[in-house]
Length: 188
Image: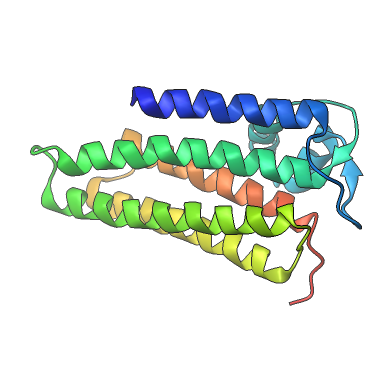
């Protein structure tokens, strides 16, 4: 768990540095807006705006939305590592019911897929490829994390700490998708 915290702090530090310095090369056609405006457009509710502000900050300075997508991606991947390790801990606990252990194992695979899809999307965006495949990959990540939440609900009910973590991860993944949609024209 300590390793996950260190990775999380390093990732968030790198994200903050990228946002502060504008460390993302400009992509033709990528919109510029403040973090506040990006969060407003990407959020579907006040809770999501608050989550977005926690991820991106509240700078009024306009920056390329691509940088916000990278920041959200890095933040999600760092949080996913923590949730993955929590699921693995529950999976390995001899006191965990068999159905919960199996759900956690499946969730770990879904987290692996979600992280892979986020990394692929980030790689495409770094080369300014704003194709619809990015949206599809990020949607696949959201669906995988949501499936995990459903598995945990069925295995252990709705009040477990792990399920609450996964629900937050799902919301974070939705927010990343919404931020990416600001970059991606709807061509599909």
